[in-house]
Image 1 (cartoon, rainbow, N blue to C red):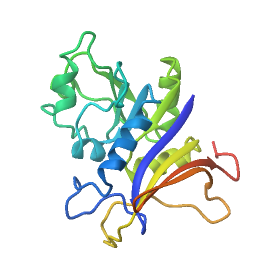
Image 2: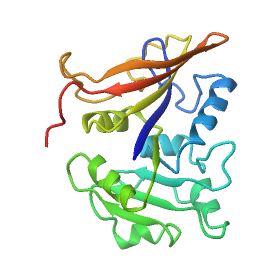
Image 3: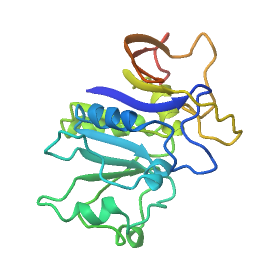
Length: 221
């Protein structure tokens, strides 16, 4: 399974402003780029915070079939009235959705959402291995990870990300509480993931990078 990530980040590595998390830091060209990259994916995964800021069906701009929608949540704080859940049942068959969480969702929680949603428990450790095994069983060919920084960290810790599409935006946010591209305990320099530029393109003042991600040592079990 191919695993890619797609982000826009400022020059100081921020992916949003804490003043308004819904403000896009990229231009309309970056949004078009995101939709184009999505065309490669038959499954898309994001964390709960990213989902709450943009709770829509995630699909590319040339896809006839909606990718499998995957959400990671720790506390099931996913508003059931938002677009993804409400619109998922309007198609036949319904838009496929899998919600991953460390603990099993109580029946009262599941009852708030459309019945076709699949619930998977990952346990207390890094959820990425469970997510990937679930998607392999579904014959997913390309998984796209869309954030946020905490989820990016989990995928990097699991040495799962193979390619990163990164738009570098000409902004400096600098806020202490602004979400960053990677959020977590971090890596030592010898153990940090490496990137290699596959392609680079300028569109006005934005730099579009397609990066290969490699890891200096095997992931610990």
